[in-house]
Image (cartoon, rainbow, N blue to C red; front, side):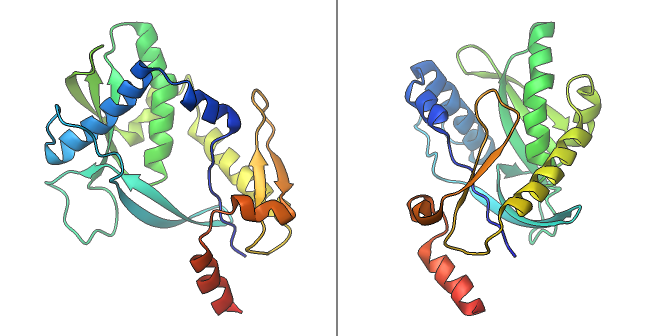
Length: 227
């Protein structure tokens, strides 16, 4: 039995996006421009093409779970990149962050940003994060490379990799227990109310078609051929 998972924005998240200020939109644009400049030398004064991305598909195991998932990859170290690649060690994750001037800013970097960066890179197998530290105007003033393997030790006062991996293992086991009907036309909605640690599951039944995310051609090709 295969369970497909797809993240969707909540109503609250959609409202947040609608209320984004021009400064917030500009900061997102800075990140895209940094990636483009680092990978192909894009002119910083020109507009961004935010629809281009390079993705990989990976297969791995976590405890009793067999996982297949896709991930966007930002770039590769040209001195190590030698396709076809059997692993992702030549690849790097590109990030931007505000320049660090105070202990509080370093605390925020380690507690929040490093946690996200570690999760994103560890699950894919990317060993390095290259961060461009920018000023208030969005101009990158310095570059620093962080080894993904050392992030947990740097941040052990803030978060634990064991806790996160165990949560993922338990969450996937819980999802398997909730999805009782093996039907490609059914959608189960998983939600976590704001401020609550609990995840809720609801089978949408006849309403599934309105939120189905698997393309019709895929369902027909995969499941009809199995039958």
